[in-house]
Length: 310
Ligand code: ZN
Image (cartoon, rainbow, N blue to C red; front, side, top):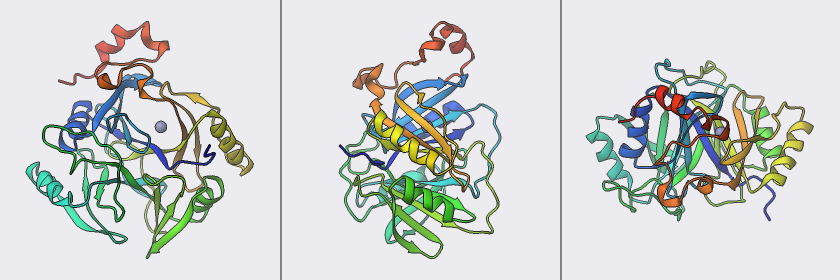
């Protein structure tokens, strides 16, 4: 049993309009809505989970769409860029597709890998990257997005920090990452426990102002562990490092711990169990509004206040 961090579990970001967010990710980018639930702390707001067919860890991007929330500001103390892996040769397809939706993008290299960068409708920074080593994860396909171009899941997430030292120490000493390479002020950390969703990039720039968390920014990033025992082992390490961390929280689809790393980014540790098929069949994932037990009694009230999606 691997008792270390297994790369990324999920990333959670903030959006404004729910329908626009849902349409962009499921239609334009073609990822699967694997769970439609509510924010457990604010049940009048949706919580969308997008991923591959099974909602595998390392493919899950989740959103709290708060209707009418203003735009946030990307800046230091945040996860600022989400990089998805795509199949080799798929960049041309995506360039044409983004053009067809009038979405501007820039082309470049992240380290030595070809990529394009663009924003979602709320201003969240996304990157599509052709990794130098093939990514064999299964994908979700749509009528417009076939297997040979579909998003594979996360490749890397970039943290922007005024000073990288304390955050790097958390990555290496607590989470088991090691420095892999650097390019100017970009530092790439990796875990060797998995072959995908295994990179964390840090951009260090003392002059970047602090970010502001609202629409178009990331709320937190979650690292993956296999089970509860390992979750609690990691908790002890975080406590021993003198950082504040929550108790174990039941998120229905995984168990979680949250702590803010010294650079300001909210980190979560999340388990594989029980997963998204705990309350829906694989073929039905994301089709019904799923509520945690404490809200089932007021389902009709919640459904009445949630924004319309069609
Ligand atoms: Zn989370």
